[in-house]
Amino acid sequence: MKNSVRIMALALLMSVVCWLAIGLVDATQINIVNQCSQTISGCQTDQSGQVTCYALGSGASQLIDVGTSWPGGVIWGYPGGSADPTDGNNAKPQADLAEFTINGFSNQDSYDISIVNAYNLPLQIAPTSPVQSSGTTCGSPSCTINNLNSFCQSPNTPTGPPGDGCYNVDGPNTGTPTPGTQPFDNACPEAISYTSDTNGKVYGCQTGTNYEVVFCP
Image 1 (tube, rainbow, N blue to C red):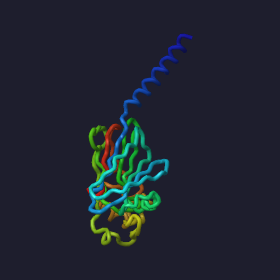
Image 2 (cartoon, rainbow, N blue to C red):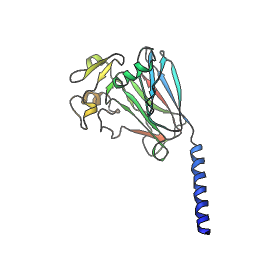
Image 3 (cartoon, one colour):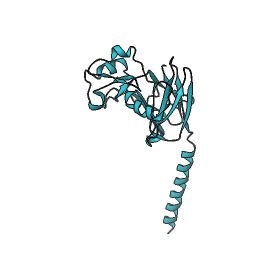
Image 4 (cartoon, rainbow, N blue to C red):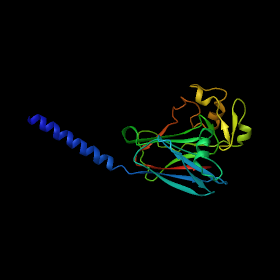
């Protein structure tokens, strides 16, 4: 009986400790910044599938609070200030993506820039104060492709509106580089350009770090 009581007490103590540890994790804030010369719409979604967009004039920003856990978080943008969720959802597969998992395994955040589907706007993810470095690479990946019209050559194709980008036609369908994915990888070596192109391209900081997602860094 005494052993059972001790086990129950220990289990209760561990539950309290875990609850307190979770409570000590600060909510993560991500600042979406438009440094482009044009107005854009910055959008966000997560595993819920709900899309929210913000009209951002040149030099404007939008601070979002994603809480202490944000699995499947994605931020992207498209030209113009409609900030319409339907436009944003249509632009998502036509855009490069800032992808986040906040407070994933072992109190770690992970993040990357994906151009697996397409590219449309220059993009950077940067950890900001307080930066909680960890055993993984707490870095600032970026992706900028100049002269997109001349860059977007066969087999890749222009997306048209609302994203106004370039489809990476092979990216979602291959686990190895192809002549179609290679130009994306050459232009943006810090971004994921096909489905299994993750080696050294998924970054991470300790949970509690805040971030900026900068368009036209």
